[in-house]
Image (tube, rainbow, N blue to C red; front, side, top):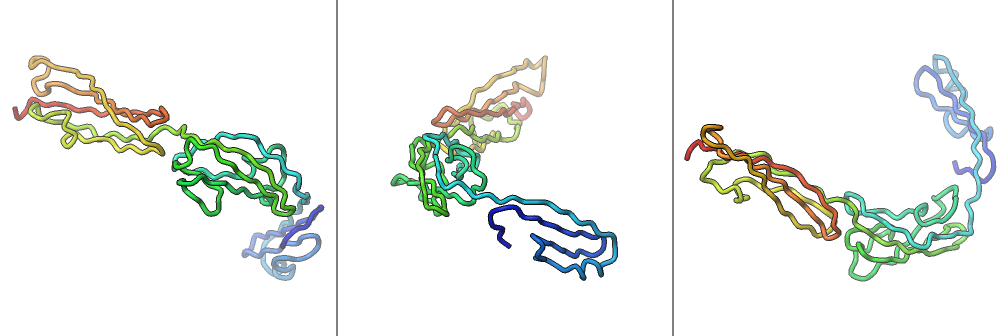
Length: 230
Protein backbone atom coordinates (compact mmCIF):
# COMPACT_ATOMS: atom_id res chain seq x y z
CA UNK A 1 0.00 0.00 0.00
CA UNK A 2 1.52 3.32 -1.10
CA UNK A 3 1.17 6.22 1.33
CA UNK A 4 0.57 9.72 -0.02
CA UNK A 5 1.79 12.95 1.50
CA UNK A 6 0.61 13.82 4.98
CA UNK A 7 0.20 12.05 8.31
CA UNK A 8 -0.80 8.38 8.53
CA UNK A 9 -1.70 6.29 11.56
CA UNK A 10 -0.43 2.71 11.41
CA UNK A 11 -1.64 0.04 13.81
CA UNK A 12 -0.23 -3.51 13.98
CA UNK A 13 -1.58 -6.24 16.26
CA UNK A 14 0.69 -9.05 17.42
CA UNK A 15 -0.34 -12.06 19.48
CA UNK A 16 1.43 -14.85 21.35
CA UNK A 17 -0.29 -17.69 19.48
CA UNK A 18 0.26 -18.65 15.86
CA UNK A 19 1.58 -15.98 13.51
CA UNK A 20 -1.44 -13.89 12.52
CA UNK A 21 -0.67 -10.54 10.96
CA UNK A 22 -3.26 -7.79 11.39
CA UNK A 23 -2.24 -4.37 10.04
CA UNK A 24 -4.37 -1.22 9.84
CA UNK A 25 -3.32 1.97 8.05
CA UNK A 26 -5.53 5.03 8.45
CA UNK A 27 -8.36 2.80 9.62
CA UNK A 28 -8.14 0.47 6.59
CA UNK A 29 -7.18 -3.21 7.08
CA UNK A 30 -4.32 -4.02 4.70
CA UNK A 31 -3.19 -7.38 6.10
CA UNK A 32 -5.04 -10.14 8.01
CA UNK A 33 -8.31 -9.67 9.84
CA UNK A 34 -9.58 -8.90 13.30
CA UNK A 35 -11.44 -12.23 13.41
CA UNK A 36 -8.33 -14.24 12.61
CA UNK A 37 -6.30 -12.41 15.22
CA UNK A 38 -8.95 -12.91 17.92
CA UNK A 39 -9.46 -16.59 17.03
CA UNK A 40 -5.78 -17.30 17.60
CA UNK A 41 -5.13 -18.21 21.27
CA UNK A 42 -2.69 -16.17 23.31
CA UNK A 43 -2.41 -12.59 24.51
CA UNK A 44 -2.33 -9.81 21.93
CA UNK A 45 -0.67 -6.43 21.76
CA UNK A 46 -1.38 -3.50 19.44
CA UNK A 47 1.41 -1.18 18.36
CA UNK A 48 0.41 2.21 16.96
CA UNK A 49 2.60 4.84 15.33
CA UNK A 50 2.21 7.90 13.14
CA UNK A 51 4.14 8.31 9.92
CA UNK A 52 4.43 11.71 8.24
CA UNK A 53 5.12 11.54 4.50
CA UNK A 54 6.66 14.73 3.12
CA UNK A 55 7.20 15.85 -0.45
CA UNK A 56 10.75 15.59 -1.71
CA UNK A 57 12.20 18.93 -2.83
CA UNK A 58 12.10 19.35 -6.60
CA UNK A 59 14.71 22.12 -6.52
CA UNK A 60 18.02 20.29 -6.50
CA UNK A 61 21.56 21.50 -5.83
CA UNK A 62 24.64 19.37 -6.45
CA UNK A 63 28.05 19.44 -4.82
CA UNK A 64 30.62 20.94 -7.18
CA UNK A 65 33.37 18.30 -6.95
CA UNK A 66 33.62 15.23 -4.74
CA UNK A 67 36.40 12.66 -4.32
CA UNK A 68 35.43 9.01 -4.70
CA UNK A 69 37.81 6.43 -3.27
CA UNK A 70 37.33 2.92 -4.60
CA UNK A 71 36.39 0.27 -2.06
CA UNK A 72 38.16 -3.05 -1.52
CA UNK A 73 36.35 -4.79 -4.38
CA UNK A 74 37.52 -1.99 -6.73
CA UNK A 75 33.96 -0.80 -7.38
CA UNK A 76 32.08 2.09 -5.79
CA UNK A 77 28.44 3.05 -6.20
CA UNK A 78 27.58 6.69 -6.68
CA UNK A 79 24.36 7.47 -4.81
CA UNK A 80 22.14 10.59 -4.77
CA UNK A 81 23.05 11.47 -1.18
CA UNK A 82 26.72 11.71 -2.26
CA UNK A 83 25.90 14.18 -5.04
CA UNK A 84 23.16 16.30 -3.47
CA UNK A 85 24.08 19.39 -1.50
CA UNK A 86 21.85 20.07 1.51
CA UNK A 87 19.17 18.07 3.33
CA UNK A 88 16.77 15.77 1.47
CA UNK A 89 14.22 13.39 2.98
CA UNK A 90 13.79 10.58 0.47
CA UNK A 91 16.62 9.66 -1.85
CA UNK A 92 14.39 7.15 -3.67
CA UNK A 93 13.00 10.08 -5.68
CA UNK A 94 16.44 10.90 -7.12
CA UNK A 95 18.81 9.02 -9.38
CA UNK A 96 22.24 9.61 -10.85
CA UNK A 97 23.69 9.08 -14.29
CA UNK A 98 27.46 9.05 -14.89
CA UNK A 99 28.80 10.37 -18.18
CA UNK A 100 31.50 7.74 -18.68
CA UNK A 101 34.66 8.65 -20.62
CA UNK A 102 35.46 6.49 -23.62
CA UNK A 103 37.64 3.42 -23.06
CA UNK A 104 36.33 2.99 -19.49
CA UNK A 105 33.80 0.57 -18.04
CA UNK A 106 30.23 1.55 -18.99
CA UNK A 107 27.95 0.32 -16.20
CA UNK A 108 24.21 -0.10 -16.68
CA UNK A 109 22.64 1.55 -14.75
CA UNK A 110 25.28 4.25 -14.95
CA UNK A 111 25.88 4.69 -11.22
CA UNK A 112 29.12 2.73 -10.59
CA UNK A 113 32.83 3.39 -11.05
CA UNK A 114 35.79 1.01 -11.04
CA UNK A 115 39.55 0.91 -11.57
CA UNK A 116 39.21 2.05 -15.19
CA UNK A 117 37.99 5.44 -13.90
CA UNK A 118 40.89 6.11 -11.51
CA UNK A 119 42.47 9.51 -12.13
CA UNK A 120 39.49 10.72 -14.15
CA UNK A 121 37.24 13.68 -13.44
CA UNK A 122 33.76 12.65 -14.57
CA UNK A 123 30.51 14.57 -14.92
CA UNK A 124 27.52 13.14 -13.01
CA UNK A 125 23.92 14.21 -13.65
CA UNK A 126 21.43 14.00 -10.79
CA UNK A 127 17.71 13.80 -11.63
CA UNK A 128 14.61 14.40 -9.54
CA UNK A 129 12.36 11.61 -10.84
CA UNK A 130 9.07 13.43 -10.19
CA UNK A 131 9.79 16.89 -11.59
CA UNK A 132 12.57 16.02 -14.04
CA UNK A 133 14.77 18.76 -12.57
CA UNK A 134 18.48 18.07 -12.62
CA UNK A 135 21.88 19.33 -11.53
CA UNK A 136 25.46 18.35 -12.22
CA UNK A 137 28.53 17.41 -10.22
CA UNK A 138 32.08 16.32 -10.96
CA UNK A 139 33.53 13.23 -9.31
CA UNK A 140 37.25 12.56 -9.04
CA UNK A 141 37.94 8.82 -8.75
CA UNK A 142 40.89 7.81 -6.56
CA UNK A 143 42.57 4.66 -5.30
CA UNK A 144 43.42 5.08 -1.61
CA UNK A 145 42.89 1.43 -0.65
CA UNK A 146 46.09 -0.30 0.40
CA UNK A 147 46.90 -3.45 -1.58
CA UNK A 148 46.09 -6.84 -0.15
CA UNK A 149 49.01 -9.16 0.55
CA UNK A 150 49.22 -12.63 2.07
CA UNK A 151 52.67 -14.06 2.71
CA UNK A 152 53.61 -17.63 1.85
CA UNK A 153 53.83 -19.99 4.80
CA UNK A 154 56.99 -20.11 6.89
CA UNK A 155 59.35 -22.69 5.46
CA UNK A 156 62.44 -24.71 6.39
CA UNK A 157 65.02 -25.42 3.68
CA UNK A 158 68.45 -27.05 3.48
CA UNK A 159 71.69 -25.09 3.40
CA UNK A 160 72.23 -26.21 -0.19
CA UNK A 161 68.97 -24.58 -1.31
CA UNK A 162 68.79 -20.98 -2.47
CA UNK A 163 66.45 -18.85 -0.31
CA UNK A 164 65.95 -16.57 -3.32
CA UNK A 165 64.46 -19.43 -5.32
CA UNK A 166 60.76 -18.56 -5.05
CA UNK A 167 59.78 -21.97 -6.40
CA UNK A 168 61.24 -23.37 -3.17
CA UNK A 169 60.23 -20.79 -0.55
CA UNK A 170 57.07 -19.49 -2.19
CA UNK A 171 55.82 -16.00 -2.98
CA UNK A 172 52.91 -13.98 -1.67
CA UNK A 173 49.40 -13.48 -2.99
CA UNK A 174 48.77 -9.81 -3.75
CA UNK A 175 45.78 -7.91 -5.10
CA UNK A 176 45.04 -4.27 -5.79
CA UNK A 177 42.75 -2.12 -7.92
CA UNK A 178 45.80 -0.63 -9.65
CA UNK A 179 49.09 -1.89 -11.03
CA UNK A 180 51.55 -2.80 -8.29
CA UNK A 181 55.10 -3.99 -7.65
CA UNK A 182 56.27 -6.73 -5.29
CA UNK A 183 59.64 -6.72 -3.56
CA UNK A 184 61.23 -8.11 -0.42
CA UNK A 185 64.09 -7.51 1.99
CA UNK A 186 65.81 -10.08 4.20
CA UNK A 187 67.06 -9.84 7.77
CA UNK A 188 69.50 -12.66 8.70
CA UNK A 189 70.02 -14.18 12.12
CA UNK A 190 73.08 -16.41 11.72
CA UNK A 191 74.41 -19.12 14.02
CA UNK A 192 77.73 -20.87 14.53
CA UNK A 193 77.76 -24.64 14.89
CA UNK A 194 78.39 -24.20 18.61
CA UNK A 195 75.38 -21.90 18.95
CA UNK A 196 72.99 -24.03 16.94
CA UNK A 197 74.27 -27.25 15.35
CA UNK A 198 71.11 -27.80 13.29
CA UNK A 199 70.37 -24.30 11.97
CA UNK A 200 72.61 -22.15 9.81
CA UNK A 201 70.45 -19.04 9.83
CA UNK A 202 66.91 -17.76 10.20
CA UNK A 203 65.76 -15.29 7.55
CA UNK A 204 62.95 -12.87 8.24
CA UNK A 205 61.70 -11.97 4.78
CA UNK A 206 59.53 -8.87 4.61
CA UNK A 207 57.42 -8.69 1.47
CA UNK A 208 56.34 -5.24 0.26
CA UNK A 209 53.58 -4.41 -2.20
CA UNK A 210 53.35 -0.88 -3.58
CA UNK A 211 50.77 0.28 -6.12
CA UNK A 212 51.14 3.09 -8.63
CA UNK A 213 49.39 5.52 -6.27
CA UNK A 214 51.85 4.85 -3.42
CA UNK A 215 49.49 2.74 -1.35
CA UNK A 216 51.60 0.13 0.44
CA UNK A 217 51.27 -2.99 2.54
CA UNK A 218 53.63 -5.68 3.85
CA UNK A 219 53.87 -9.04 5.56
CA UNK A 220 56.63 -11.27 7.01
CA UNK A 221 57.75 -14.79 6.18
CA UNK A 222 60.25 -16.84 8.21
CA UNK A 223 62.73 -18.98 6.27
CA UNK A 224 64.87 -21.35 8.33
CA UNK A 225 67.98 -22.85 6.71
CA UNK A 226 68.90 -26.15 8.28
CA UNK A 227 72.37 -27.67 8.37
CA UNK A 228 70.88 -31.15 8.29
CA UNK A 229 71.39 -32.97 5.03
CA UNK A 230 74.48 -31.02 3.98
